Amino acid sequence: MAEKFTGFDPSLFKFLEELGNNNKKTWFEANKQRYKDEVVAPISLFIEAIAPSLKKISPYVVADPRPNGGSMFRIYRDVRFSKDKRPYKEHAGVRFRHSQARERTTPGFYIHLSPTEIFYGGGVFGPPSPALAQIRQAIADNPDHWKKATRGKKFVETFGDIRGSSLTRPPRGFDADLPFIEDIKRKSFSAMTKGTHKQTRSASFTKDVTDAMKVMKPFMKFLADALDVPF
Figure 1 (tube, rainbow, N blue to C red):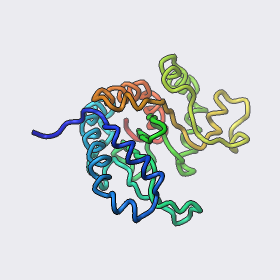
Figure 2 (cartoon, one colour):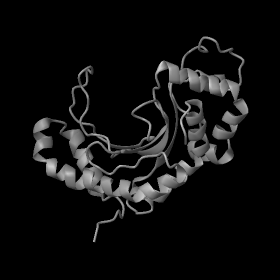
Figure 3 (spheres, rainbow, N blue to C red):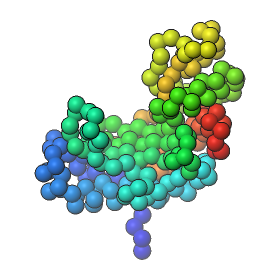
Figure 4 (cartoon, rainbow, N blue to C red):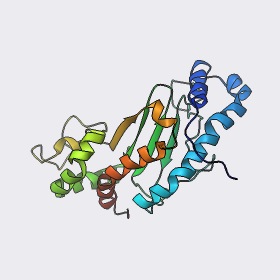
């Protein structure tokens, strides 16, 4: 009988905590089997478990449980252009990308698991200039639609405000007195909510995550429409 997701064992976060204190290749190689057993395997089960619910939110969201090339982020950091040369990430991440994400800019969902914090949500992160311009223009052209997608009571209760680094001044071509100019100034568009480690220890963590993602569906749909992709 295939194993099912019953929640994350605390050993997952214990491993990540130890990795944070021993972020070296020699330590990781000596503990690589632990990484596979305590981090990779349960996250793969989680992805399998949440996939049917995500498909109901959008048939274009991909939940791929493969350890390599799937929805789970690699543990290895890209240190080529970074002053921080630690070789490994000290958290685990899961991204549920749009089926067209390899061909173009699309919105996606994200889950962050670390010894110190749990959060999940989604959006468009650091889009290239043409896609960024499309989203900004969509907000300027459809302020009522944007308001419904991001300022509804349940959305605000769950996520608070939209996140993303911003320009100091309005981007070229956008008047400072436009509705939602602070959002138009953003360079990324995301919504995140915090979870607890206690939540992750239950099989119902999949429901906690998908309940939040259902709330943000209008926001994700707005972004997808702005980028001319289905959702």
